[in-house]
Picture 1 (tube, rainbow, N blue to C red):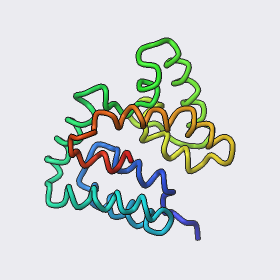
Picture 2 (cartoon, one colour):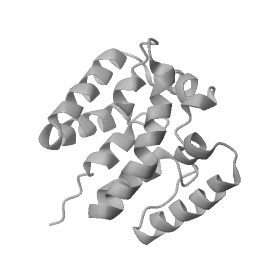
Picture 3 (cartoon, rainbow, N blue to C red):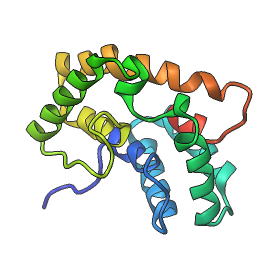
Picture 4 (cartoon, helix red, strand yellow):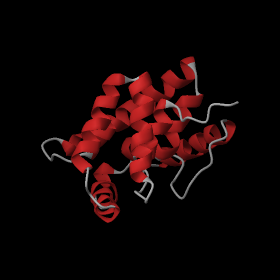
Length: 161
């Protein structure tokens, strides 16, 4: 029997997808995975869950759109955060698409540098490869993504943290 539970990073990526009717189920699954493997991160996800508890899916969708789609500073696209519209972003997109394919991660309607793709990739990378992606790309992009959340009391800050 194979384990069908998501990895830590993939579980977090569920919360960065546009909310659907299964969002609460995905939140519970994420909290469960993190509680077992990353208890400190589980506390943040618990706070996110508490702050969004009782919101209907339509309200979650509106919050998601206001947070990530209307303000490009909060874009979940790592390459955009690092390179903006520079030519280097194109090279980054090509490299990420190649890594996603190599590790069997299907792209959704999002670009290959979106966190919903790159987080599950981290579960499949090991050692220096994972360290390189985290250190060169994910961590610096997250630092930029988190800046506009300061003082805003947006629950998605907990997810990105």
